[in-house]
Image 1 (cartoon, rainbow, N blue to C red):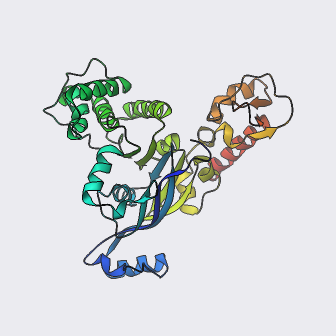
Image 2 (cartoon, helix red, strand yellow; image 1 turned 30 degrees about the vertical axis):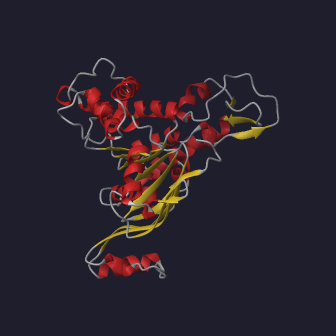
Length: 352
């Protein structure tokens, strides 16, 4: 993700309220009372505020993870972003265009061409083979048969299922079925990709493999992604930035390292206390610019976890040069900073 990437998707003061008359509380002037007061009033009058005043930006090319426990509102929020569920108030902007103001016909076209969606339920069509399932959204778009097949085969190869084109869903493992679902959602070349707990139905080993596959695909495709999960380890492994939700509210947004090092409140601190700092903090998070001659040691990726550097640290290396743009100031990571993170991690574990 580029540091100065523009916002692809913007969520502004979005609410979703379930109940007898949620629209009563939001008129054309918008609500003018404190959101917390309004949420309490809604509950007192037998309404359920599932999403409360959510605001954030998703930058072009980033993986933005929304996480929280069951009932926190994360899945409702992502359905609001795609208008599978209609928000009660707020704005949702895709490239500056308010999705809540587009017509039903325009929305259908956006979903067909600009959005990709993958859910926990794979949703494969049982009467179609792998090739037919992946090509199906292109058929809906009215693409010619030869173009559909060529594109579908490209996506099948991309997710590592070459040779299974004629297999039917019941002949595939859970991980393979989810790969088909991913290939199908990518076939239309979406600008924005929504994934709602896509790996939670898989066993732990397959889930880890699918996370690896997901990161591999993102490195190649650079999609703008909104990813929903309740799994803290998955969120911290995949996210460029993440939002933590509780009772419909977003309580903190930031990079994984920011959230672990500086939790917004006791809830976030407790939520993240078992996350090992060395697997979350990246070399780039602790890097410093240096005007001195760079050391001759092997360069380190900016996204390398600190735990990857422990063997070199044990071997006595003191300074680690970071890979980067030759036109930019050189960046280095000092062993003292890694040791400080290790010390902090140990202190957290003793307290917990």
